Image (cartoon, rainbow over all chains, first blue to last red; front, side, top):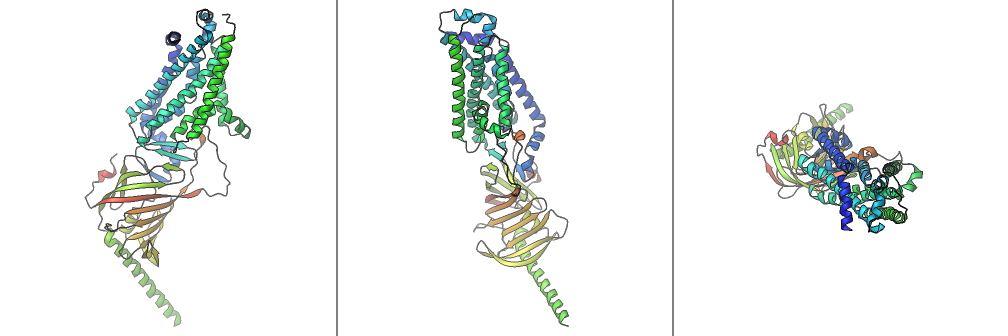
Length: 279
Length: 227
């Protein structure tokens, strides 16, 4: 199994598209850092203008902690796309390339092949999240320094003290990893049905966009659908920056994320272990 | 003849009231005008609707006539009407006319209630101060044109010097915060629809506990400008 995982990781390593995600994250995050470094104060003055009208706010606002939070918020839509780029291709890419049949002919069970691919996808997702963490939090702290963090909410503002933030980022990245693993499993599931690599990526992105739009619109009809949308629960990492942390809400959302991940992986496994591999 | 007597009585009593008010202000300023500058440690507790912020420690710097700064390692929200506005009001005797209103008991002390009426164009529309027999300001209500009313309630202890409190509770008006969903990027948040009759104003409070006062240390102006 470990050998198979190594092989799958090597395949990801040798594919140029695997680096697109890392490159995209690097460019986006560096651009945000540069923009914030040059004109971040004006941006924050606009964002927090509601509060500055009523209060004299003193203290350092433009901190590495806040910049990392802004980056994470901005990457809500992009990160799943970057994950789907690689994970949507992992089975269907081989099907279209004709290597899946050769792989299935090797003395390994279909389940072993399937789970080695899935674990390789999970490792790739993990690497993306860790890279994002390094660029957003570590580079953010190096450039802007540490300090308190203001979290803007629709009904007010939460100010978190400097010493009370890093552990929240730790949990937020763990939640982000499992949320992206859900996307990986969705793309993986569609990939197991498709015969080319574009279809799973497009379908996955389409589903994410539709779910996000439904989740954003405040129409009574959608209120019944929202709780069952996976995108509703994927952005629960933001709640780690509430005070107090709504652990019950987070655990419920993570359970739903986990259930979706199991469901998509289960469907994919069921199909993959039974399908006729003709190419 | 009766009218003349009445007018004369009113004139005399108004002079007496004005003199009473000025005497109270003199009593108060006997303490406050000794302060050219001060700095002290401050422990600040916040209770502001819509603003979830933990208490914080800092250092307060003040220099006459109106330089004020709180320095700390973290973010602090202070109402636009800060408690040192009282010092500014009291220091400028030409900008406000004191009018004696009544005697009232505040924090167990019998206080003279003085209305400070602005004589010049000023952001402060009105100020009411409650001065005890020692000349300490036990309570003040400051109404500004821009920021509504702030109520300042002071506490003094045996160590209190120059009329400076050991604790201040500031209660003030604030507008209810409402941030658009797209600005807060809270995609799952629900916009609560409130009836239009509900007031958009609410009150918040900040409690400041002062310790280790240092008076007249010739504070440099750079303290108020440095980052």
